[in-house]
Length: 339
Image (cartoon, rainbow, N blue to C red):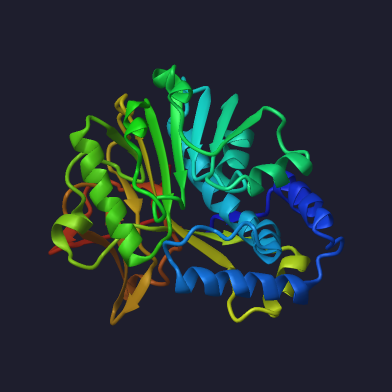
């Protein structure tokens, strides 16, 4: 079982419109791959650098490729939050470091948010979005303004891949809800775990991916581990052709995230746990990291029981009563319920 996401139709429509404005009416895989590779090299060389929006190749790379994949990352988080009721009572979003509205496409389609304020130091992505006919209700700002936080109890603060460029601003902590996505690197992932602790001290409650309000077991019990999710991409033919010209593929996309609110989450079903690792084969068993409290734990499926079931990373599952625990391993001998 896999969590598989196709590209968003609205994102593809806007992407095509921006590329046409750039003079690339067809998705020329070689031209776009050259731009994507150049932007990738830029981020590798300057991981905390601002996106070079003034460069035409950066606009083409972002709108043709990165926007499509990053919206999938955001959509996966939004849909997980929606299952939990995370967006109930929220009607506006302030997107800090919004770029081309990556998170806002997912929120507009799936979270019921009505009002969007997109903040980015560059005017270019907003200009391209307006020219491409993106949501006319989106408002664009070059900096945070106090007027954006007049209704904090119904405001969602969003930071999607922007905290690598800037610390979380103090205005964010006025808001009822926070949705934060970061790259799935060890450094960024562990920084997000530290931010989780900070938010707990500030009175926030964790809704996802966390299943509890205690200390994070990966930060508490490991100097290396970090929490990140993975979903599969249903790649259309044009994306396959583009990636055939690249030295990398994104058949899956990974990300780290936090959903937090001032309001406590509803209680999860008894035995709820989050799968936070890929299934790894070892001698005599398969193991998969799981989170349900302050202990660092793994599900273990013994090979003598037959082929291990496939439980998707990032899923919320229900562990049945009576499972045996040996050291940090929870011995699983039956299929799990995915919540």
